[in-house]
Image 1: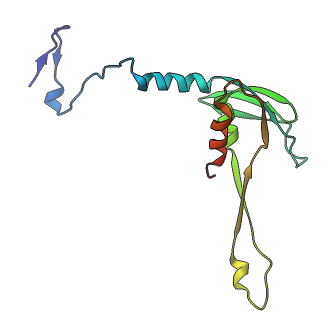
Image 2: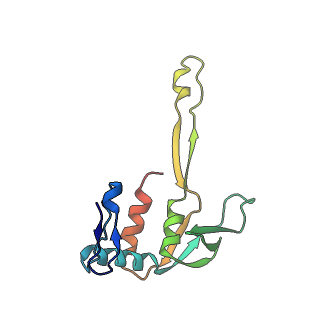
Length: 145
């Protein structure tokens, strides 16, 4: 069954193929305002200091990427970056495993793996323009790797 659109006069055939197609109305409600506030929050610029690597073969810089846009970060100096890149940096964690020493009398405990999760690039935020920033970062850092 087809219908005619009341404004455009075009034929609507969505019912023929069994789809319930429609247009969602966008209202200026709290949900849209929250999305816009979050987007604005993620675009704020923070000053981040990335510590020098402990391994001398580590390069002096690395690149963060969000949606195809790169942010170069230099070790040992403050880099201004948008919060969206800071989130990527904060989520860059690695887990290394170690084993306890083997005991020839009781070898079973030597099969245990002891995990240790840490930041790939240790950093500190030197300046955050938003008062909600530190709590947001603590939440990101507390999440499991």
